[in-house]
Length: 192
Image 1 (cartoon, rainbow, N blue to C red):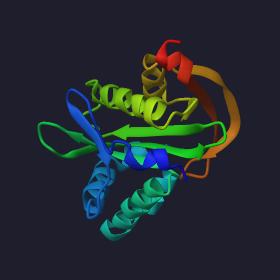
Image 2: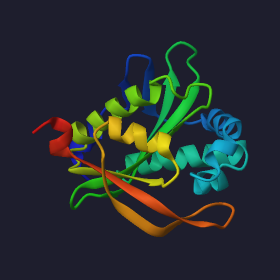
Image 3: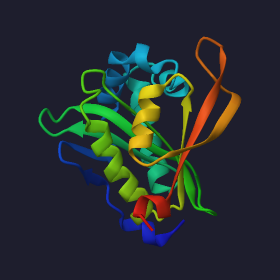
Image 4: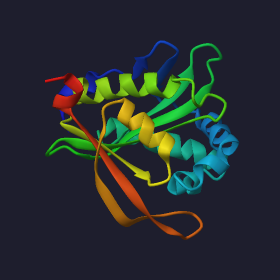
């Protein structure tokens, strides 16, 4: 563990959202978000869908993310709308390799809030957190080849295509698909 990470920000303020560390008893809100977006998420987040079967398992998921945050293994944020104060999305920095250091990023937003720039704002503050506070050198995103909205968003944030991973991801249906790998380095983000 790294002592310098004991005092990092747990809430990241964007113009219209706050991306903040999940808290105890927020599992039911996450469950509702996942259920409302089940059809959009099932092919892209099968492990998350499997883990969040009901409100109790969602609470376990939230507490596990919180524990992993404290252990410096993963940084999971709920994305909260400033106007409604409701949970509208999730951002996770996970598969952290502190030797490089690097991490993988994934994210989703509620269907009612998609296409309004809210996830772009939230990811900008999350990337700032990752590169400045966590001092990561690289962040990658793995996305299905047909997930063009995610790829478009990643490119808008400066990510570049690094390659294709053949037969790298299994959907809930059992279909094994190819994945696009995108990456962003600390120097690219900071404009160095």
